[in-house]
Image 1 (cartoon, rainbow, N blue to C red):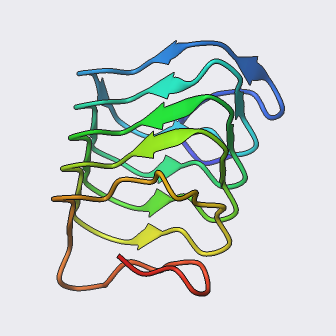
Image 2: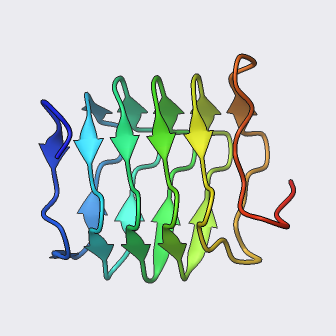
Length: 125
């Protein structure tokens, strides 16, 4: 568990998570399963966002989300439509080992200049 993080229990099935337009300090969603999708559109993550090994079944909406610190999606499984359209990553963004599908939308997303995003093998924008 990450110190001081809002924690979604490991392996818990989360239906229709609604984080839209909210400010979330630090989120630990490692191993969480989002069975009915996850809405984090226009959310602001002021601390770290840990989605390592998370599973997004129907969709994952991070449209316009702002990540102020680490955004870790390594080994996450995006099985449905996924949008990071217009998302802003200020610091480290890692998708190494993630399963990104053909519908993954990174249009107009911005990444911090200090550290470029890390992608799964063979993935390019």
